[in-house]
Length: 75
Image (cartoon, rainbow, N blue to C red; front, side):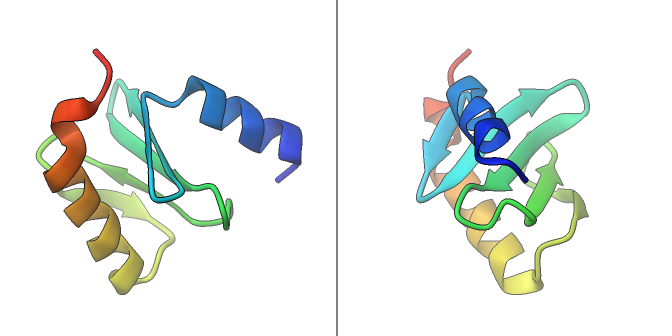
């Protein structure tokens, strides 16, 4: 993914935590690993994994971040 696209995603993210850009979408919360932009996950608002190409460990990390920090997500 081009650096310009990564920068655009980061700039438009509702929250960035530990290198993960969280962006609210109509169908859930899209999360992109900014350090490895080929890794992404779509989670529900309650943190359940809907789609992902991350391994299970990284999915768990993102879900824990979401559970801990979702209150800080911009409205």
